[in-house]
Image 1 (cartoon, rainbow, N blue to C red):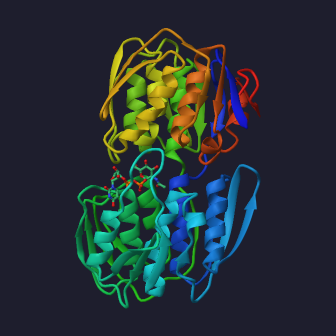
Image 2 (cartoon, rainbow, N blue to C red):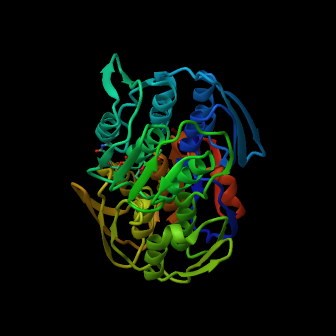
Image 3 (cartoon, rainbow, N blue to C red):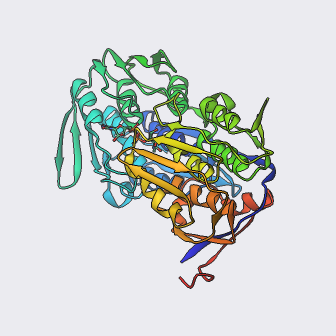
Length: 426
Ligand code: UD1
């Protein structure tokens, strides 16, 4: 079993580059299904999720050609006139994000058979809003033998109000609406930068979408879309992870290729913790010259603080001066991470969707286990600020979202290697 072995104590210093967002890229790849012909996507992170999505699109009848320089990928997806409507369980269960083929398949073929992804380590993840929205557009949806079966001879426009600005539901409804007959209005839509990125791709394919970036999207369905080329938006969660790691280690890191405006609240929190942030034309620089001060965290849909940055923030707060209150409003099972970081001496107490973190001077290295992508990088950050050696196991989670993290950390001066577990005898 491979682990990341982190020897704590280094201050991160130097430049790091951020490429396209995992959470955008999967949706962009799925949206390519909406137009027959060759769509090209660039600035994709060279992560396993992209490979799995390639496999899924190939199963659906696309010809996918991938090129990679090891860090950044690009794909040319040649979509057939009649894609297969069936997304099998063995692929969907590997990346929950692949549920985003539902909207495009339904819109293109009038029928979609997509495996139900099931829950995962960050908790129960219902799809009721995806179904209710598609249903209002005329789709019949039922579950059969673990599959979602969705059928609509002709999708039509509808007024849809989401109970919560769900990213996935907004994406599935949006990608179905672009080819529906008539106008669809999605109220209380999610407005994450990844949704804006998807809208930009769809617009360049010929879709008619108003209100991009707002919580009301108005979509006038068109007869057909055409293939295009598109560069994915920078990964704000990876950028935010580097920013938090820099602040936690009292480092000085320039995050290149990042969009500071997508991280306003997170960067503001770091300033309150004592960091200096300089926004640059192509990213931002984070400098920290003191032990971080505590701050409170409330996770919310964009533009609120991202739940995907919550474990990394807890890692920083565990060594901060003072006590912090964390409120997790999206996925409370994320607090599983707290039991792992507690093994390193963090003083974290959870109750429902709240956690209280009392900062300690120093964590101590220990063997710990990543339970999901963000918990994994949270533990790496904890390892960087801990005394001694930390071994983070189950690093396949980290590899799902971060390209060769250990190499990037080493380039910033950290002592991190990927190795077979050893020190702790695991
Ligand atoms: C996406 C991201 C994930 C991020 C999350 C919130 C991808 C692949 N994943 O997940 O990294 O943490 O956004 O920013 O892009 N909900 C329902 N019913 C539904 C849909 C959602 O109750 O039909 C609930 C969820 O349980 C959750 C909340 O709504 O509590 C937000 O979920 P959603 O925004 O849909 O997240 P995902 O798209 O699954």
